[in-house]
Amino acid sequence: MYEFHGWATIHETTTEADAGNLEMIVNNIQKFISELNWSAGLLEVYPSNGNYYLSVGGFLNRKTTEAEEIIKLYQFIADHSSGSYGVLYTRDDEDIEGYDNNFRVLVLARGNIQLKEDLFLSPFVPVVEDNE
Image 1 (cartoon, one colour):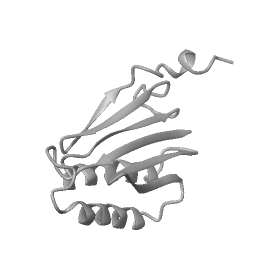
Image 2: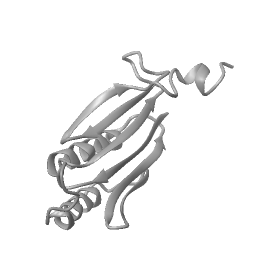
Image 3: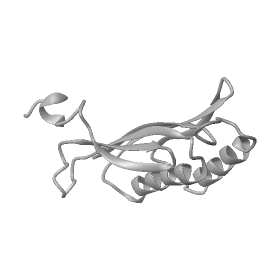
């Protein structure tokens, strides 16, 4: 099972949420999303009180191209709106690099994304679930 949950606040720059191009940036993000042919769960940009935010979440039977598309979306946001920030939590119980019992966190900030270790829900067993 591949599990993912995330959010991002869309800001044009690190000094201004909207320096005049925010609508265009959001439209480009929405276009990127529409071209994904997404069917794996929640993936949408919403307006709220003059700001925009991305919500993403779902479960896949295994890590597929849809999982990679979400990471590409976060990179797209980083590349086109340097003031955006957020996180994407993922867990792949079939991970072959030793993270099959851990969440990993993709952190979006200042035009970059970085992969971080999760300190809150990992190791999944026994923090969240018990062994059978």
